[in-house]
Image 1 (cartoon, helix red, strand yellow):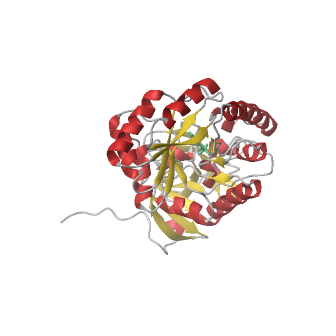
Image 2: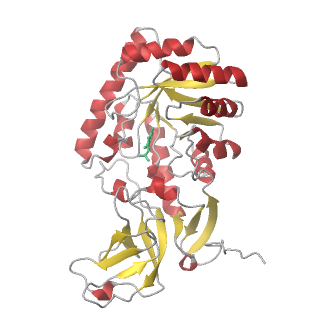
Image 3: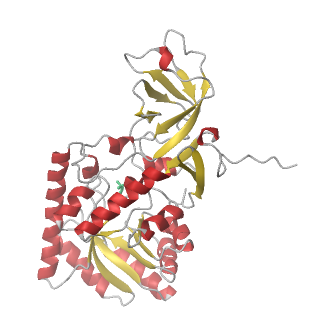
Length: 384
Ligand SMILES: Cc1ncc(COP(=O)(O)O)c(C=O)c1O
């Protein structure tokens, strides 16, 4: 007889009965986050193209589009496939690609959806043109400029213009504009300091847009920005389109930013864990052990935050992650009495949402204290 692993949760069940570790989304908070970003973009007259690498979940992309997003970004070509299958019709690959296999898949997707991709080298342009010609599709192309991140992108306007000319030489490529993204800016902690850094990067972008205009090249789209810079990008007047991702969930890292007040998001995403050992709860170093460690939580941007009934726990800290164990201790000033009992459920806010999502097959949506939805993380693991 085949032994089946029971599902982590089923719709209608109490949230406290979810089998752990499980990825849990507070749907009321999530919907408030969606609305805040969309309304801010609408007020500024800027298009919203949320980044789907944060959630990898078609149900979430469709919820964003239903509220007014023009489409989504993906970071990889294969990542886009489940979204196209689910009916998303406008996807920007906010990244460069190299190699005929990826170009061929992109050209195939472009038969089903309006697809675009970034370039920063004329050889990428040639590869895209060849794939689009073979498939009989049209691929949108944006030139990426480096506005200080030191990752992909050409350095200046002459290099950008050179690529625009290369793109325009191919009938099956459509030049759509510029991508200007600076990841480092997103995590500058102070609001005023981040606003200054965003303004400086925006000025670099505006200078390239102006130089292209002078050469007779209009940029229909100037895309970039993220959850940390959005409030300042929207006010800056440089971007026609923003591509934030993490705002739907927030995470420990983004929670460490100070926000200007115009645009704030709440924690909606948690890893539900269970206290599996209290053997040391009353020892010399009081602690309990939960069943969510490195294989259930990404810790590259810091350890998860312990969450209590009223928000971030005032008495507990998650202090260390092993492969499948998490160590939870009373915070300085608290006593062992604060430690949770064996078998109790403990919610944790991941330090970094994107790679945490990539560890799960499904998102368990809760409303109040009940499981309300189960959404497949269909693009999980699709990083080709
Ligand atoms: C190209 C690009 N656009 C947008 C984002 C925005 O993501 P987030 O809002 O999650 O920081 C990222 C994140 O790494 C990115 O690489």
